[in-house]
Image 1 (cartoon, rainbow, N blue to C red):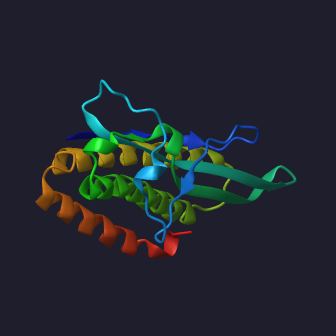
Image 2: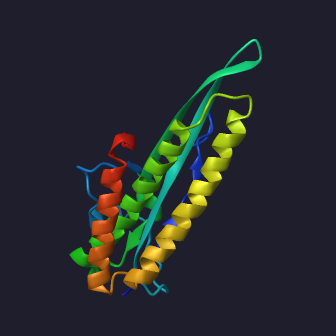
Length: 178
C-alpha cells in the first residue's frame, strides 16, 4: 500500500481557467467518489490526493501610496487530479488521504495567520509573495513528513498520532478558518 501526495500550489490570476475543486470544510469529508482522475496503473500508490492552496490579493492605493490590501486564501482538493485504485482502497486509506487535505487546510490557516500580522507598507506585495512561497514549501515538506512517518498509512499507530496532532493544530488556528 504505497500512497503519495500531489500538491498543487496556485496563485489566483484574474483570467485563469479554474480547475474543478472542493473547498476544505470540517463538515464535508472526502469520499472515494471524489477521486476522479484516471488511475496510474503502473504506480505502486493506492491513491493520490491532489490538494493545494489558492491565493490572491489586491492592493488598495491612494495617490500612489499603499493604504490597504485584501487577500483570499483557500484550501482545495482537486478531483480531476486525484485518483484511487478502488479495489485496493479501504476506509483507513481514505482517512489518510483526508488528512493530506486537512494538512492543506492547516497551512492555509497558517498562511492567513501570517498575513493577518502584516502591516500596510509599500512592500506589502513582496511580503505577501514571500509568505506564499514559504507556506508552499512548508506545506510540501510537512506532507512528505506525514507520509514518511506514517509509512504512507501503513503504520496505524503513527497514523492515529498524526491525525490527533493535525486536529489539535487545526483547533489552535480555528480563528483563521473560513
